[in-house]
Image (cartoon, rainbow, N blue to C red; front, side, top):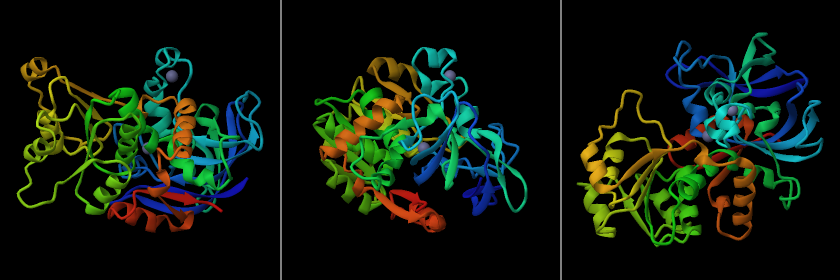
Length: 376
Ligand SMILES: [Zn+2]
Ligand SMILES: [Zn+2]
């Protein structure tokens, strides 16, 4: 069928995206054709369209990104059993269901994760103008398109959970960014009421972690960022304290000790900034946990003093997608939203898909937390 998609081409100094006409085929046996209503933009979309061809990951172009999709099922392959035509769905990451990790119920560490989610598969979307086959099925979905062929394992049925079809746009980012922040605090750090939580970087992932820390009843929740507007928003959604890293003569340890003399018991880093990561590790209370979800600069290495590690009982760890199972975490976050505990409506801004350049610019300058592209 004939449709439109945002296609990423070989990057220059920055990602090169263009709204183009594409032709896509019919769903294979394990695929679903989804009419995409909306897609959130996540930093991974930008990161994985900034890498020139010839990289060790195997990223190649042209490529259709988008991995926080939401829409309506239009057709299903013959093996598909979890959804039917007309179902409302949110889209999340791909897992193969058959490797050792998937069999052990760790699909976020699927042996095929990097290949299927980051590289995707070549075809079946073809650029109409150039006749080139694109790399699609990014995160099993490539949802930067009006229609997309999606792997069944990337689909979460939300029919019956929505109060209106318009909520598909609001909930689109639940499948990656919000789920990652939520799971990092709930599943990985296992935050509870006695915890002092420091969250570094108040983008969409950090905010989701912050709201989850509040849901978990954490006694102290510290938001750290360089944008005052984000710190103000963090206070609105649950931060008990804020730290602005841009104040003159900023001293990380002093700023943290001023709020919590013993240091945080949990630090959640969404920045990937080496200097902040080192300061955060040092600041942790004994037996504290440092949880990572962001990539630092490719040549950055964290230098770990093992003696300091075992004499303090600290833990340093990371996670993919907050160790979440989308079929559980997405309904959970929707329920929290209904109860007023997860006010993602304060974090989301909408743009028509044709305005993606504006969305990217406003995401970059910090004025927008979570841009969602709509196809209506
Ligand atoms: Zn697998
Ligand atoms: Zn993402």
